[in-house]
Image 1 (cartoon, rainbow over the protein chains, first blue to last red):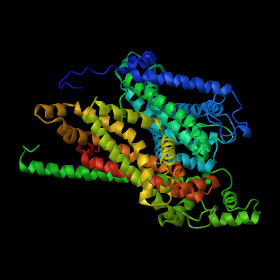
Image 2 (cartoon, each protein chain N blue to C red):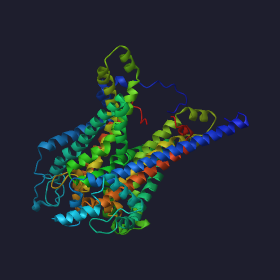
Image 3 (cartoon, chains in turn blue, brown):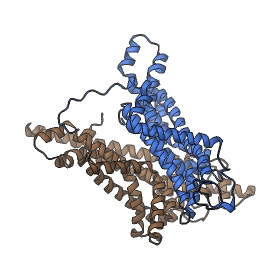
Image 4 (cartoon, rainbow over the protein chains, first blue to last red):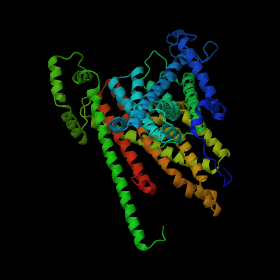
Length: 294
Length: 331
């Protein structure tokens, strides 16, 4: 904005957005880049879930620590396993887990938050006090605490991250549903005699879900990082299964002699988080979502 | 504001002072409640864990197949027969005196072991926090000052890349680069301020990315606001508007982000210390986690929660002090 005095038009209403969200995302410059990258990574993960060129977990000591070459595009690790196959196999764990945790947190938050917001009274108080207690610990610390109780493991990690995060989404969903109740179109529907359940399902839930979904998509990158971080520490995916963070942890003993062991997993984590960030930011732009409202 | 009679101004000031104190007291009470809730969660870790606590304590001490008599003795020792509230109050009393019990594995005082490792963590995290504040402040001011020119583009590329690297991946790559490229492995030998400089620089550079983004957006928004235009019409230079008008208005969300990130920083300590082989609290907790050494985990979680609460409190109090609009408790 170089000119000093410009008339600003009011932002378009968020209601009209959902139907053309993908199209708008596609026309957003960095949104398109994120979408292409994200689709490529999804494809990579889906292929990896069903097929890999070599067995990702089968050691082959004759082939140990081979630099990248035609047969092994990402090289081989210290036990001779094909890094390309391992990266491919790891993708659905690294990306799938992050998506799964956020989807779970989104659904739990949406249900609890809108229930609390729309019912009010005792239900609201009980649910929100519970959420407040869960929010007293920083998310990562709570996840560590839950892992401390349950012990390391992939499913335990997912559970720990869900427990650590649900309350934030429930709180947000509650305040969004309270906002949505006072939107003109909801009031108009109520005046027109539309039954309560139709107002909730047809107007309030979609509104809240859209806003909450944008917040969840902005958190995807951080979640991918968190899952690979916990796996790096040996608290998530257990060997011999491949996960990008766990692969980095295996690789770090050999980084002076085999740099390629670091590049592939680190690069894939980087590209995934980059794509998630680009999509999340573009989504926030095109959906005209308000910034955090406390 | 300065146009009314003297009396009105002074009573107005008293009212504002009162509002300030009131808002601060309410915030203080909230913080105390939060701290109490954190204590309840941390206490609940032990009874919530699956299996008989006595069994787990014995297992952690290395007794694989305990006799019923041993289990009985451990139960009495742990006070497991007391009602839950009594157990909680006993535990809380001990914690308040700085006693987290004995480590399951070493049988030494957890408090003692933590105090030995805490300085290392404080040095590393404190320096990292300092670096990231300095980086993000200067980058955001430069980017906003040179909007849409090359320094801004460069900084935006940096923020995108920095935000897309989880801290541990960035740290791992940077460390590898330093060790392989510059043979700097020896520098990171022991716990000194000098040894902490490089890890803290790396962490700070990564964490500053998202804060730079936040502060730059806030600064640009403030630069486009009505009061910036007013300042412009009165002949203020862009630099003056940036520093005197935009920065004070954009700094609050930035402060809040820093306060919140203290929690993330402590929560990330195990990962960061694992990468830099830093002998601090995080490394200690990681060890405890795999050994199911519950008193240590409890102590770490409580320390993390309390520092988080304290940081959030300080930031909010600073915000109340800086921004008069936050003093009205009805809003």
